[in-house]
Amino acid sequence: MEPTTLQYGETVVQDPSYCAQLAASSGNFFDSTGQLCEIDAPTYADGTCSGNSGGPLIAALPGTTTPVEIGLTSYGMNSCDTALAQYFTRTDAIYG
Image 1 (cartoon, rainbow, N blue to C red):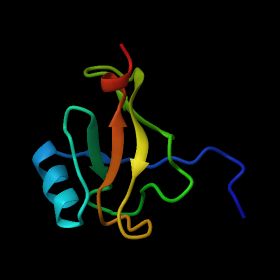
Image 2 (cartoon, one colour):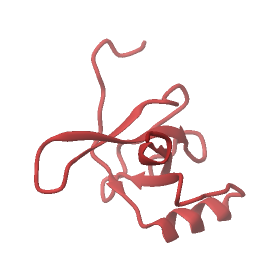
Image 3 (cartoon, rainbow, N blue to C red):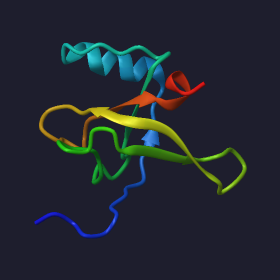
């Protein structure tokens, strides 16, 4: 059964070198100018899954609680495994 209320999780955006290394190890491509990745560390409880593509990655503007969309869900690894990074298209790369 699909949820009827908005779902969210708290995650941590990772360093581009980590994202690139993990993507390469699984045969995927990572470009830090157009992508970012995140992981729910240290709990590894939340992540994206099939059907989440295009969903937002939201962060607070530095020093505030003002939300801003920083990414759009692109892909994840190994059938929704929350212990692995999730990949997003950077919104600053596609919005002028």
